[in-house]
Image (tube, rainbow, N blue to C red; front, side, top):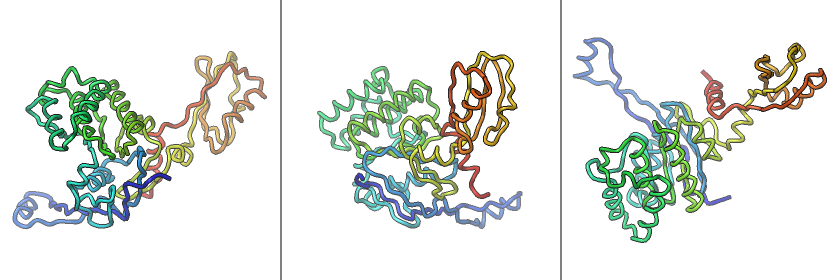
Length: 333
């Protein structure tokens, strides 16, 4: 077991939201006498994260992901429960906490809009009192992994979305924070930029043991970067475990594609418990099955025992996106 550096216990956050009345008369009444109702965005969430972990924090829109991240970074004050990040309560010790974290929020930038990227980074160097040697080393890494040379002297307002996101990553990581919060960091980016950012995340995690907490709707981010996921819905934690555990618990639907030289195949031999459908097309037998009911080996044995030739086969399991969707569907309505 590693050192727990983020500890969250019974964390809650309640907002007062204006209750709007319908119609013109309702608008007039709201103008003079507003009514409010409580909205509980996060409800008694508890978890801990060890040093060096990359944890995916998943949930549908409005689940409470960003609210949790803002409480961890000290932007919001919890309504209940406790948060401890490297020994500090983020909202009480904001300056000390800020020195220990980096943050990238997909739709917001830390950069100064009208000055070149290098000037923003130089200002961050001054603010965080970063030594010249550390600044130079990190800038070399950013220029290589994020390919920043082409826009390092360009004003931020003239950058494309992909360029701005790369510059924001450099800004967040410039002071070598032990913890990095990423809220939808690859949203709207093309495939090449996404791969550059994933490579940077992997590099700083391995070389600097940086702890990373990541929210995203891009499940390829989760599969390529995270070994653990925490899933919340309606502000409540519903799962906390490894990617393998998620797949084991919820990833039941599989598909096996079998290449065969046979042209006349009786699919009635595949009508049994666990096999949901089967069809023949383009020299392949496509079979969908529930792996908790029947294994791929069993299916292959059935085909062999019925004298069906097998030239090759490939098994496709549910991807993480389908699995998490199934988790949401299983929630009590």
